[in-house]
Amino acid sequence: RPFPHKQIGEILQHLKAVCVLDRSDSFGAYGPLFTEIAASLYNYGGKPRLLNRIYGLGGRDFLPEDALQAIEAVVAAAEGKTDLALKEYLSVRG
Image (cartoon, rainbow, N blue to C red):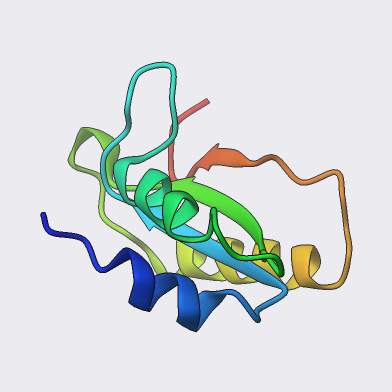
């Protein structure tokens, strides 16, 4: 804190999709950075589709495959795919 809500909102409002990567999770909610980004976009009309990807739980490393999965998800969201999960965990064992 403080979080630059206005600056983030102005930068992201024109995008089609944004994937927010959080290294921590909030029980029953989204990741903390995702929540701040979503709040930053609240007052803007042209909001991008937001996706939250949680990584690094249990001390796991962020792998290139995780980055690729997040990139593929945000590209699909930008192209209008609607069956994407809003929140997903990366590199979590089954």
